[in-house]
Image 1 (cartoon, helix red, strand yellow):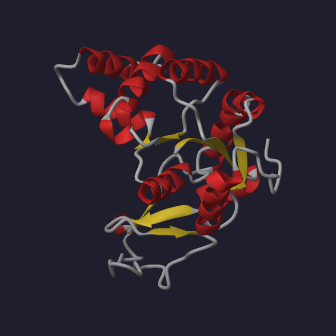
Image 2 (cartoon, one colour):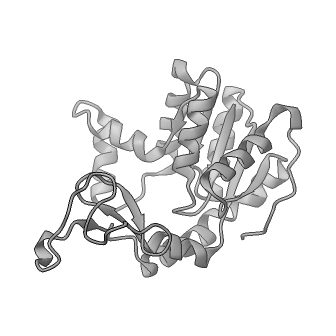
Length: 239
């Protein structure tokens, strides 16, 4: 299985990549993980270059990113396939990746777009919070703790009279303004690659607003070898 998962931030790409990786026994590859691994080695010249670029707040050039992916695909655990999580993110990256895969004689089995409704995704992400002790996840609307001052999982508590002991934690970027900005970036830079893969006959669309289990089932059905490479009718159009 050789698959690319595409979708906006918060669509669940990481979760689905992990599930597919476990089921099919192929690695899930994230460029972020590749970057972090390379920068940990002080004797790696490429890692030092990537670290410098990232510290300057710049994007790692496409040629470096694709080179790292090419090296990763040469590893033994990629022999039976791989799952690319969130890459490519632009038409230029898609073209560079396509060229590299052709040079290696690798053919993609599918490019899965996890479609979402923007406003519902904003609501989903901006309402998230977690226990500061064990990391258990909650949501303002969909999954609140039974006791607003106590974690259901680990039992950690907070003193409502002392704000400094606040138990619940929120990621600073989990707010409506930031999420909308990230969605705008996705639509302007990443969504244009969908026609690129659609023209190749490998684009498959699933409804990312369904439950995690349902999304997994949709992806597995779309990639089932018995179904060939034809694209299933998408449940919705999500830009």
